[in-house]
Length: 169
Image (cartoon, rainbow, N blue to C red):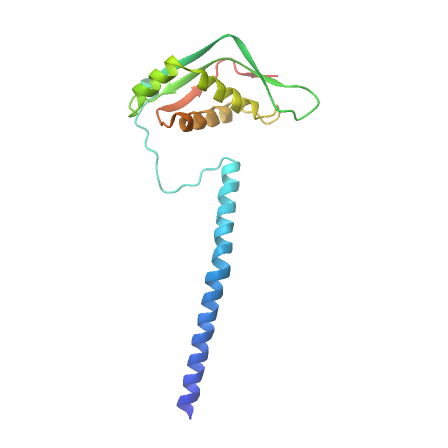
């Protein structure tokens, strides 16, 4: 009789363990995944870098970078988003795109930017126009512009841009 009771207790403990495992898998794990995704989104919004264990190796030095300049006849005035009653704008004199000469598609991108640089101008103006006077920051504009240009041209040859004469008013 004692062996049967012991078997029933073991069977009950096994069933409870199975039920708790199912609860864990079907309710706790999705909630943890949603929380992890939320943390990733918040970190990306505030420009934090989450280390994935991958180090981006840089195969160039600043001295090796080649530049392509987008010159304007006069300074370009770009309207900023409104955050108060005043109209604010940013001014840029030109755009200088720095290219990595060691990139696989350097020649193609260099030729493309030299012959037709309207996309560079449009992209930078679009990025600047998304900011308000109170939250615009030249470094953030440069980083976002590089990111969008890399996506537009599907390349890693574009590594930096400079905005000589950048001014907000």
